[in-house]
Amino acid sequence: MFPFDEENEGEVSFGESSDAEREMTPDIPEAPSVKTFDESGDFESAGDVDKDTLRAFVVAVIYANIAVLLVFLGPMVWYFEGWSRAGPALLGVGLLAGIRTYQTYRAWDRSRSDDPDETMDADPNETVGSDPDLDADLDDDAPER
Image 1 (cartoon, rainbow, N blue to C red):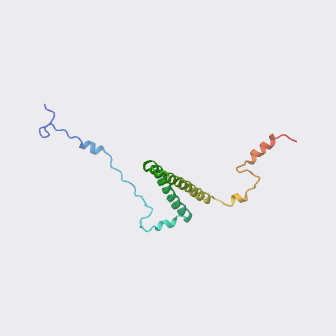
Image 2: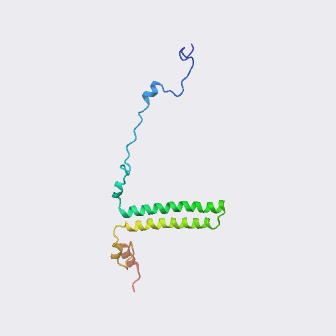
Image 3: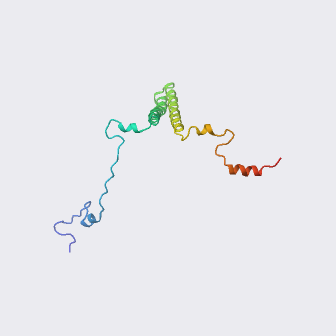
């Protein structure tokens, strides 16, 4: 009448899966393989990137790292160390590096425009994005002289 058999002596196994649970559990999926940027270690694949893009990226990363470092370091040395001249100077240089990061990105973005001569060919009297149908409708509504 005792529910446990004599071999287990009333022990219950926690954490071990039963045979039924093992049969119902799905197989663990395998992660797909990932191609890394550079498998050989000598940066051969960096030659596939446009030189202007690579240069802008490296310069922006350097400026951004300087900006993050100095924007946080400046107020800390000002407050904790009491350096009332060096702290604000570091903060200012950090803010300028952040602005320079943005300028580098904007210059790269402008250089990637589809047709740089497009703005030179445009009619200077025509507004950008004007719609001829809309202009005709506006002319119809204008009072006659």
